[in-house]
Image 1 (cartoon, rainbow, N blue to C red):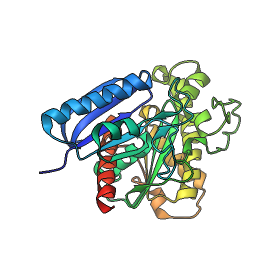
Image 2: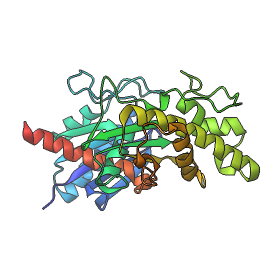
Image 3: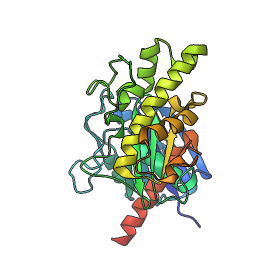
Length: 302
């Protein structure tokens, strides 16, 4: 009998909690708005406890969380949300209440690393050893996976804040409160809406064409930096903004131009180098199942 895991996708807007063995074998699921830390984490804990009573003991729990978060296992605040702009959540311990309540291993990582792990196990990056998942939405974030493990350092990679070359003639100042015209500042959803004074979903006609061309330029500039720094075998490109019709195809064209023939790898020209996610909105909770499994394996090896 397969081990039963708890999975939590802890988003800044909503929490998704599930129990099962993976995204294709979920025995119970719920979602609720992200409110204050105590009530939100309490609701997640209560759901998992109720389902454990119905379906049997959980072997581990995985949490894919909005951030920034502390991921260093030897740090006193491992498993905390740190200096987040989400009101009331800075300095919040996320995994400690779960460990205290269930006394099982708890895996923890960023929401985008979770999505990357989910796409690697069940989605668009299956069978790929080294890949990057980039989400372009309200913000821009990225997760790099190497040989099945997400890449960490002093903190998780902040791919949304790499500098990007400006499109010739573009005078838009950018929306990032820290850097102005970084990748996120020029290409996230709020930047797109501010640039055109209307939400992206309402763009049409010539405005849509111009917006798509500008967006493709900046996404390609951000991906160029990622290609050169991390040398991924594949890039999975998701997020709400990437739902703009024809955008991913145009990004592929612009990325080839941005790379300008260097380092000249034929793989960079293949359609499967930059791909859309296969799991869609399920990637985060799928990744939380992977985090639970990794935590259980790590505990077993001790």
